[in-house]
Length: 310
Image (cartoon, rainbow, N blue to C red; front, side, top):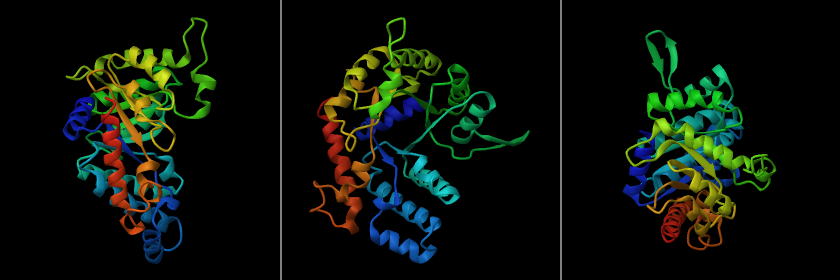
């Protein structure tokens, strides 16, 4: 079961963190960009190849430190077919290194459309009656709950069939999330509380041996008070926590998403890891050519930072 594998990877590396591979071309060191442009041209293909090289450097630097990576699909889709090829190859490379892949796509719809999204990332595509083939074949996917259970069922079924996981948006890390998510209903509960209750219910059939479910939640580090409430509602849901680092979330903030057993959450950092070589903390210690060493140093610092409050 997905959640059991995730927990065992976290325990193995003593590290409840995930690195977001959300690369823009401006994050990529100039020597990688120039080499790609020379080989493929200063165009979309050159950009996509530069990002793939950049991702591989980072994966090589951290695969023994972190249990998982989280590529955000938007950063690949904006480079078209070449970008999606880079997403695919990044996922394959990370898997070869033993990392769990959480695709951050926030997908959902109804009926066959939801099923198609699920098939693309979690399931297998039917070629004919006797042949099915995995496409992106990621381990987990972020999904939007706005369509209700009709839009969630196809993902849950594929989680059961293929040992995959989903993280449902409950309380996102952005500034305006409260416009909808914090609205209080006639029953006195906020929208995010109601969604958390649904997530807990949806995940009952996917509990693993540690008591957690492969149906989890996304809860931003930037809202620690809401995280406390959500953690009490989610008895079995694992929480994916964005917003640490560049968005302002701290280790003390993310601690509220964990349980007393030190489990229950995995914390994402993207820019603070990818662009560590540009940060005030590491800029003087690592050159641009050694950017991946700065990423590793920041990943280790993050690990110690989070573990210090658990």
